[in-house]
Length: 229
Image 1 (cartoon, rainbow, N blue to C red):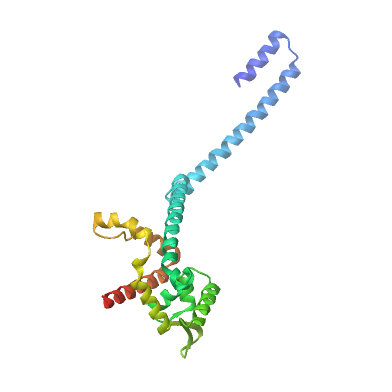
Image 2: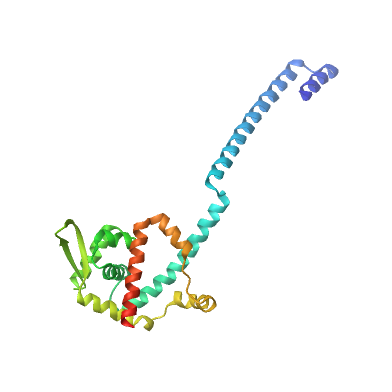
């Protein structure tokens, strides 16, 4: 308002064409109205954004940093796990999917193809196709249950069991970078990392059924190792 009065007074003092001054005043009025509306829109968006973030209990910065951290660490760890895993199973002419299917079938004692797919984090068709290859090698057998004709059950054959036990016996014949990298933690704290926070995240993503299968397979593996010892 002060600028408008100033322009009007200047036009009278310097005898400037008042029509030009009026046009300038109208122009600045429109500019001011536009800027004010923009300010109100951004203010509203900012308030809504803060309310949304408050509902989520984290900031966008925290979310991005966390996502990038876990992505980079997971990828780096998986590359080491993958290399260790492939080195261990290579002498037995198995790939990771095939060995994982054997491992799941062995420790779950009669898993369905759906169980293998869920716990192996693979598509059902992938689980079925690799299981058929293992069947052709005499390492797995397929069956139907009288009480459940819908699902296909997979069992490890005697030949498959012997192969897995041989692999366990020769575990230390190949390098294991992940194990070596964890030894300083074992030495310092007296135990290997238990990844409790990671386990909680996995449970939230894949559900209780996934973790139940996971825990059951580990218990079976532990009992098998104790029996062999």
